[in-house]
Image (cartoon, rainbow, N blue to C red; front, side, top):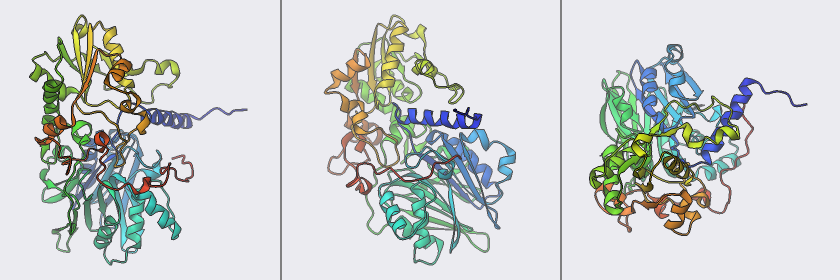
Length: 506
């Protein structure tokens, strides 16, 4: 006899189904966002607000750790920041003047409460909590070495490896141990850590993942994007440099010291291009460049490279909107909101049966027939991964009466998977690798024409210059196959992500 599931168990299974569908779907996902503040009496509230601004970087879970001079406090919840951390009762459980927070989309480790960050450990040098944005490309290699030496791992997150490295470091203080641990890891990451007196920030040697430093009421703040500073009225100070570790510490007299540690042989910075294409919020400034302006420039360059005769330019919301504005301005074709996005569609409000899944893209997008019927439409999207969503949108636009549907993509074709924190499908599942040429891709999607922005067009939109193939200015391996670091965990194994862990009910 099969026992009926409890509502809680059913919800967990439903969420697991959705996560599987999304991870195997047609959308790229960022891994997470981080926020930290030192020496402010409203640390928890400010951290919650910062995470709210970074919600776009991860919607699976969020966590906050604070310290009040006596002990650490933590709240970790599955779901959105606004579902939990707007409750005054929740924030009341997080007293203190030091706060660190994390909003998560998993790229390593399964969806479980034990993997929700910040991760905390009590070490010889005292308590320490860590929040991490990105992926370590030698994380599993280090994990195997640590376990062989007797370490016990409680999570499947590569962030836990850093805690073990700090614990085993031979250096004396927590700051020195943190630097020692950071120098042993590889990949793309921005990382924050807090102790009883310190807030420490680190960015990977190439600066693949972004991290900014701010200031509020004289107190230091670190965040993944400037939009997290804007929401609390903090001042932007500077970007944390690639390969830099910044250690902020409260002194006995209450002042805060700030110390910077930089690599002896610094690498050239190579920020992830997808921060500009897709991940960062349009109002953020990443690497000194306004994201909205960069995306608009992508559309302008796309109109120059792939012109088309049409009656209306329509963005695929929300990511394609800035590029569509640029395309419309450069081409002279009117811009219209021909697709309306439903921002309030539920994620777990209905059982995902096959009949419901058949509604497909219409749950999130609706065609604005008055702007489409009888017209030649140019659809502008920021990227295409598998092409399945594009196929459904083209079908929806045709059903709304479009005479022609032309797709223009404001980034190049994606050929290669990412290992630095972007959740991408395997290479063989990417649209560009499933078809012999552009005509075949276009036929699969059902469009009248299909064109992508060139790699040089993207580089010009972001940095003002074409790509230098001898020394690329950005991280662009998903387009070019040029990975900036070695991929140690991928060498000599076909399934590096498989970890032996106990199933979690939390």
